[in-house]
Length: 245
Image 1 (cartoon, one colour):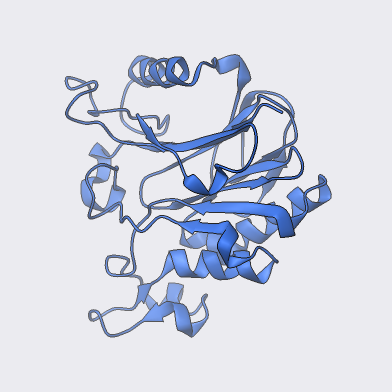
Image 2 (cartoon, rainbow, N blue to C red):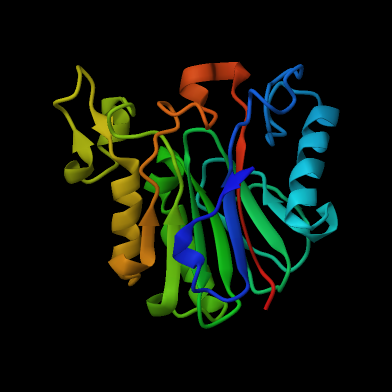
């Protein structure tokens, strides 16, 4: 039902993942086929609630132990200790044991973070707007404030739109360092979002061996939803993390 990053295997008590679309085997008659977990999609609420119930059963958790971010493509971070739906934020940080936190994506990147020596974890949503605004460094700053040591923090960057497919305008390109912009692929510039996010992790003190970058492209791999490929038929994946001690 989901991919589990290996980078957290040595972090005791951490469960994490990003869901697959499962279009061919789940909810095949639905408004949006598959395990769509996006409340902001065209699917009816009952369909999305059913999908969440399936996932929560697999994770042996319930809605009462889950916190999700609304996601507005900004850089605001919420430090949370209770379940619920947190508005106007794109990242969640918690030290609360057994609270599952998550963000939804369908071409944007999700970054999951866990400090192996404390109970601090985070889930971050970063498209180009959030990345340019600094949502990831902001989340890392809140993790540190909550007691995390960034030198012992591990990070996973999820599948997202790849450099080869991420065509952008000049108004976007100027917001990123030139080394993350490729001008040889097509007529318009392309953004290497994963490399930029990895650069931000390295720049804040997380060492390369503690970073896992998923190589898969959401636009090219139909195991995942892609808004650029599917538009309003695109569901949303959930990237989640929790720590039970």
